Image 1 (cartoon, rainbow, N blue to C red):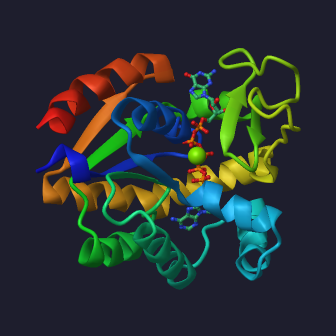
Image 2 (image 1 turned 180 degrees about the horizontal axis):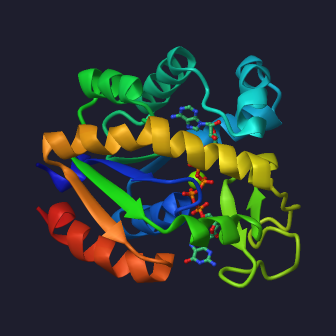
Length: 216
Ligand code: G5P
Ligand code: MG
């Protein structure tokens, strides 16, 4: 396996820290970050046809249908062909995992395991910069100026799907529909779990695991 073209996947419940750990992986190993949620939110923000089609699902914390998602993400992955990449938020159903495996079998799967009570607490304080996907959390990585992105100074917003009822829906869907995806990759022998209550606790375990893989 060449470290140069490694295909990595990050799994974990909503708000388990996939975006946070991903940004550290991207910085350390110089891989392209492909986040399905960030890309969908960007389409919604720009009011594209896809954005209009998926807005309702995201706002309610429901999954976008597989056919739409698979077509969209396979196209997005073509854009980073020839580069090592880190996929975040996709696949989320066994149907998506199957479809991805047929065209782009991944090499490494990182699964974040964070207790649900920690997650529910965290989303209340989350603020995002929509154009870049940069994410803040009051008390964890607080923005330098309240309500503003550190790099651009633009406004931060709260995600509609961070409302308590949408968070509950997202966690339910995760349990019933996404958990089998973990089993899919376990069966392939490429899944590694990282447990913790904070991203700072999880991150050293992730690098200890990825360092030798990326150095190969
Ligand atoms: P997303 O965007 O993929 P989720 O729900 O999987 O959304 P989310 O919410 O983006 O995941 P995350 O990336 O796992 O969470 O976590 P994060 O953003 O890094 O961290 C969460 C918060 O906690 C942040 O504020 C962060 O700063 C903070 N934080 C991190 N670590 C710590 C810590 O240690 N301590 C503290 N205090 N705070 C911390 O998908 C969104 C929607 O898009 C659609 C669906 O509708 C989905 O609901 N979608 C898909 N639909 C179908 N199929 C797919 N494949 C889809 N992909 C997206
Ligand atoms: Mg995310």
